[in-house]
Length: 172
Length: 211
Image 1 (tube, chains in turn yellow, orange):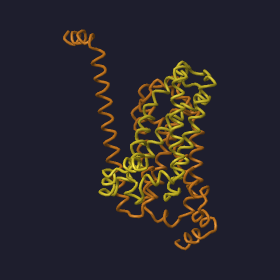
Image 2 (image 1 turned 90 degrees about the vertical axis):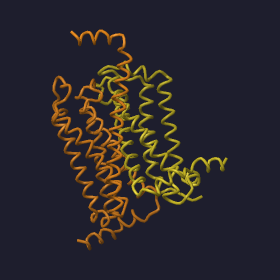
Image 3 (image 1 turned 30 degrees about the vertical axis):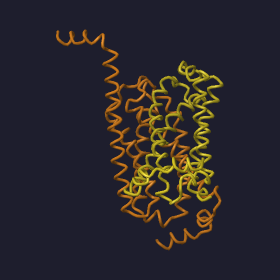
């Protein structure tokens, strides 16, 4: 198992890119933050509306902002993948070792998965469809409020632990 | 001046925050700086996107309710940012990039304020659609200043001005390429979808054009 992970997690092509150009790592860091702002700005507004803030918004109209949040998430995913697969070029430690020893990275990834599960449940319980019918002034169902609150909490946890990753233990 | 910065850097507050391995000190201050950014920049950017015509069916007035959230984010960042400055005053205050970051933030906050005064403080009964070109220009400026502030903020992590310039230029080029690529693909996707969806009606449209 370890051999397989060690093989798959370290991408020489990404390392080569980082070694070749001084700016690759920094550009991806900036884009990671830009993606984060887009995701939190759009999804956060939807979550806060469902929780009862700015109830004059019809929910279906807010959802038109969400593609920009998805774009932000894709930016974060792509650049985040580069950070993990190319980290050897930055700190001379194998990504497998970092993933295994840095508890903040583990927590961050765990909360990203939870946020994904929360989103999935929001859809499969039919809440996503149900909130589309909410017009100006309508209160969201309790279950939708739960998903919205969980979404806010989970994304805040993701950002908090993510910022702690460099302070985590990199060596086993 | 340098001695003042050195004095600040040697205060017990500065040394404790800087040298302590406690994860709830320096790393948590950094994390709060990021959380504040996410809510302030994120919501401000969403408003700018709305002004530019994204989600045009969304009424403008209720955005007022989000301004306290934005100001809370700003407050988080002002406090955590001041602490980060106390931790390394000499590094930041002697770095050109740091002043670029402050200017970019000032620009973004002013643009944000402009939009607030024009549309959110006393909203019009009916939202103009599309919004006036001047407001859309301000929205573009808001997004530009936020991207610049984020990039300049990231660059304070580098000591080498050469690396800073290269990274700034690289970010500008990659962002421009992403925006151009995204614009072209969204436009062509819509065009293809419209062309396929409207096929039965197209004959009528061409006839109309020939008349």
